[in-house]
Length: 85
Image (cartoon, rainbow, N blue to C red; front, side):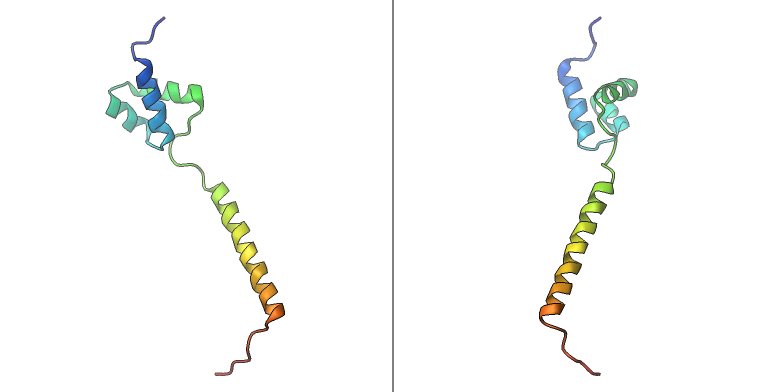
């Protein structure tokens, strides 16, 4: 059974989905039924929407830990000045 949509449409759909465009918007933009867009997305496991923030949170926590260790090391070498106000 052949598809009524050319292969270039499928490629374009998957490209737009991978860029984070919602499936409904992609379907409307390209004039393809939303059910087709969802089926193509499901066939290749392309996520709908922005990626989860879990990886970015871990990256920022690691960076924060690095900064805290750097500050602690600098405090050992050069303690803060005695400041009175």
